[in-house]
Each structure stands twice: as C-alpha cells, then as structure tokens.
Amino acid sequence: GLGVDGAVMFAQKGQDEELMSHLEELTDVCNKTKEYAHSSNITIDSIINYKLQKAEEWRIKVTADIIVPVELTVPTFDIAVVFGNLLDNAIEAALESKDRKLKLEMYCDENRKQDVIIIGNSVKNPSKIDVIKMFEKDYSTKENPSGFGLYEVLKFFKKNNKGDIVPNIDYDS
Image (cartoon, rainbow, N blue to C red; front, side, top):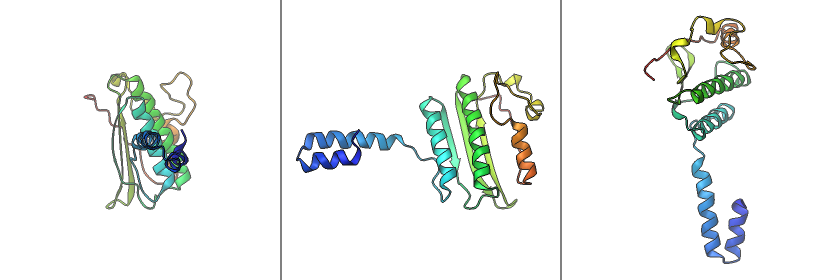
C-alpha cells in the first residue's frame, strides 16, 4: 500500500472514507508485527522477532520468555550467526512435527555470570533422536545439510569458553 503518505493524501483531499479504510489497513499490518524481544541489542531483537514471527506465520505455536542481556558474553555478530541457525533448525523441525511447537527463553543467570538461551521444539520422531550422536562432527538428520551442525555450535561455545549445550528431550510434547 501507500503507507503513511497515502493516509496524508486522503486526509488532505478530505476523503474520509478512503482515509479510514487506509488507516484500518495500516493498523492491521502494524498489529501483525509481534515484538518478542525489545532491548538495546537491535541485532538479537531483530533475529528473534523475525524468526518467531515467521514461525507463527507457518502455524507453529510459539512461546517466548525473553530478556536479552544488555551485554552479551559473546560478540553480537558471532552469537547472531549461531543463534539464527539454531532457530532455523528448531523451526524446520517443528514444521515437520505433528504438534508444531517452538519455545524460546533467554536471560542472564546472574549467579553464574552467563547468558542462558533455551530453544525447544517439537519433532517428528522424538524416540529416534540420539543425543550423543547429534553432537558428533558431520552428523545431521537432514538429507542435504547446509548450515552448522550442533558439533560446530558446541565447538564455538567451548572455544569462547562461554557456555554449553544441554540437550533435553521432552517426550510429552
């Protein structure tokens, strides 16, 4: 559409019906943009908001509890690449599952002085997930793997001495 400029044009011409219709359309567009994360870290906020919005558009039930730490313990660009990839993988797996669920939690554990990111998703065959193998080099459940495997993600966190990945299979979801 015409955006705000269109609304101004209709108002200047005194076209009230067109103006109201246009404003309703703009309001619908604005209301569809859900903000899951809002912090001083625009990069992380943008990734979270974009990915979770897409997940909802694909009819995935999203739950989120997010407090983006003011200062991340890992450089923003590095965490953005890894984080975006993990979210892509979680969304892809949720899309293939019956339940179609995605959960994201993010906060800073003050006691342990580390950022905590929890990404959970429903999967097609939870009983077939091998939590040991999933961290092995070159392991993938995909036919044509293209991104980081969990091996690379784990290596990244170990190299930076900034955390760990703890797999948790919830067979009820």
